Length: 341
Ligand code: NDP
Image (cartoon, rainbow, N blue to C red; front, side, top):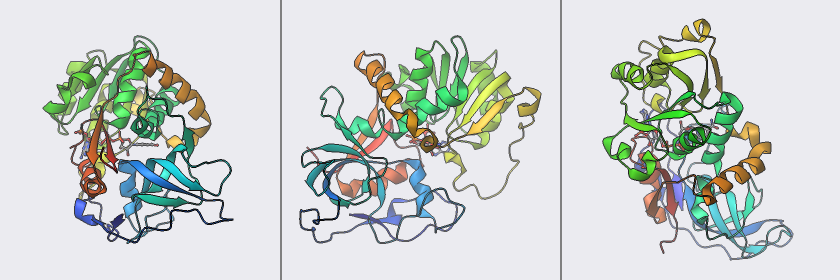
């Protein structure tokens, strides 16, 4: 099992030694009779930036409950049912949903859980990214908040990651010109990631961003899909076009920002340019999940969408895999394969 040792009480990003890999006795491989629960064997675990929010002490202000220290971390996973006391789930079924960072989990209250058919054209782990929560975030953020139109200019930050690479490809399929930014040269030369964008560029988080934004968007930005916040958001605001849209998806740059700095200097552009800027949680749109699955699966099977994932093997690798999201080590969607092949 991977457990959280103790809550992180300051604003810093998580480190691998905030977590520990522990060994406990394997429960009986049976779901207790009358529990309605089912026992699963975890195959793949998803590393997601929102999990940082669950590492802080419980707070009424949080939209999601904190993890329990010394208990296995919870997260999205793909699992196989091994025993069930629930008529909806049979031994041998594959499911995607909330599970524990451990080899076996007894699931009593299914959360964001769906059965997946073993379609070998779609690898099981893709249900954590392309067809999972990050892909869905890309879909609802882009379509529900930004209404992309052919010919528009779209900018995506953290573009090589789980959400960003899908936003880029969906916007391109709508006929937009899409520029993505990533934090390192290794990411922008990745052949498969480059396909997702009209152009994938290295933009670091400094004043240079503002100049570079102009260079890639001489006519301005119609849609900014913001995964990082901070300086990048400020630069995008300066370069937005009139009636532009900004989907505020995530603020991964804001961990460990200790001083308030100059803040968002270009926010008045929201007024002057009549920009629509909206934050969202993918969970607000769950009714759209079936439509998302149909849309993205069809494009994937037709070869219109590629997907890049970054797989680490073994539960022991999970703490570093999660921490690496906050230093930009992942190239594509980060997942942990619990049992190496
Ligand atoms: P990614 O796969 O994109 O991994 C995180 C990436 O963030 C890193 O690879 C790195 O990319 C970038 N990053 C890390 N630290 C910094 C920093 N200090 N400044 C700028 N960039 C940094 O993660 P996801 O695709 O899963 O998530 C992307 C964003 O979407 C996150 O902010 C997440 O919280 C948010 N999100 C929001 C949801 C919602 O419902 N609103 C749901 C799911 C995700 P690089 O090296 O390119 O800088």
